[in-house]
Image (cartoon, rainbow, N blue to C red; front, side, top):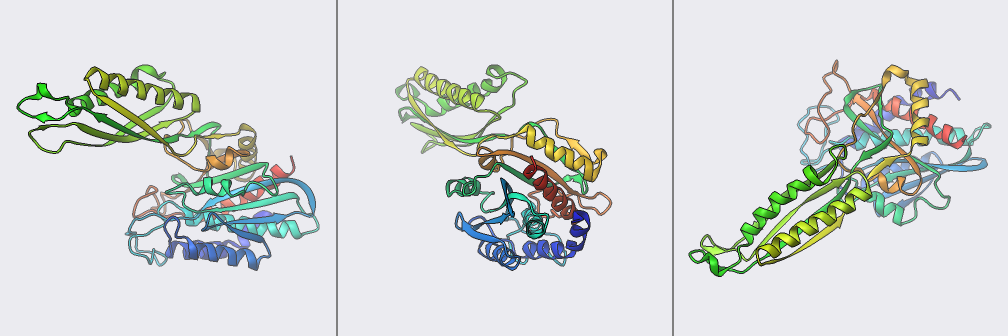
Length: 393
């Protein structure tokens, strides 16, 4: 099969699919119409599929010959953002919008599914299997973890997994790759500081939790600046603080919450230890006491070099070396594709969807975000080639 020609033949259908999803976005854990439409397409094309993680879908394409299994992921949920663009395909739902390109991800994976199924059913069938992960709730609770927990990576066991994300700062027709660390782990921090209340006119009779909090906040800033190498990226951001009951009463309790971002587990665990030490010792120094709780978020996303090599080789062949850029530094933002890549060799890359010429430059998570739909071709073409390359290893 001439894959490039086949992608061109189904391009209008891909555009229709993407625009349909864009007009009817659904928030995390509410992707029921999206789920049904995905299953309708897969059923129409004769692709085995089942519901996973309540609103997600797993598809399975079996080759005529035994071999490895490659998984391809697309997230499907939208964001609580009101779209301000005035396109024929703008969101029909007030306050809900595909502002992160998940409609494009879904359309690309459906295009991959259609072509992969045609190849699997042909005389020159694939050796092995292709799994399709239409993942819900990426923007909130981390639907990838739920899908993995429900066994999406098993029966048959996935050997390689690949995902992509559209990025408007890259021109359509280009891709951005990175070896190794790509996205940070995320942990929520909850600090509780306890002192003793007293009348504000007699502060010596109490233990001021607000003064305690001031020292804690200042001291925690030194973890990144003095305990971590300048060559290692870590973020401790404290976003909320609350405490006290009245202007003239010494506060007996203050609560502080924030986020911790790190790029590897050793650093992540070390920083947690330092936060606990600083909070505990500071509270003790003031005569109070404290507690520190961490709530695990997404794991760090670390690309497998072998799989990145495959994506790079295919991108060079299909797009040309001039259309490949390498991301210099990892992002401290989160990406729950890491749950898939923790279970199998994986790679995640960025697909250009911007066009300065067409005025498509708005960033993701903004109310005017859009894509140059030519990126759908690039995404399908590259992912199909990635599947064939990995199955042939």
